[in-house]
Image (cartoon, rainbow, N blue to C red):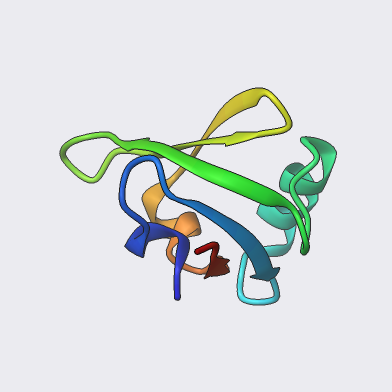
Length: 76
């Protein structure tokens, strides 16, 4: 499942960042997002805007195109 397929408020674990652009992956690592990180999708902004995710108490926006390359495993 992809990060963009989550619904608002759903939690997931990031399982694969290998398809994400190298510079974006590096930036995500700088912000504490890596494989194994738990994230919660807070919202998807309209008009193909960024996805807002929460990780360890911080919120950040990820471009929709970049988020569509992040594979996650949804938590039950």
